[in-house]
Length: 108
Image (cartoon, rainbow, N blue to C red; front, side):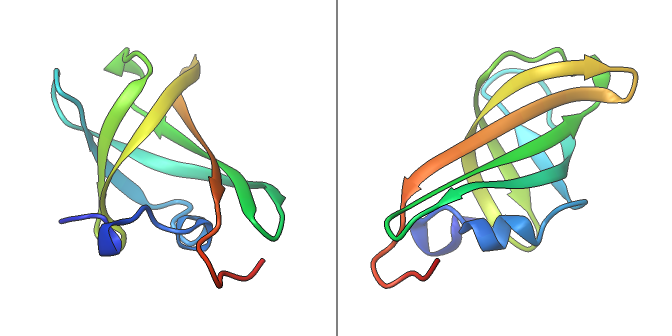
């Protein structure tokens, strides 16, 4: 699978994937699944969109921040920079924060 049309999915596309599973791989270590727990719309202007995604991985993963390859049946594949932000008995939580220019002609 490839990024949809050579681009990362939009915030609207990500928002529709809450509670869905993504398969994750990195340059080292085994593949693992994460669930998208939260989509947070932080800011939206005529030119910039800012939002965050919160994923939960199994607790034993013990990964560092970095670029991970994610695949999802509906969204295809993409590379995201994920940062571990906390861990509890339910898993290890990663966050991805987007602060990007909107495509020309995109509406708020």
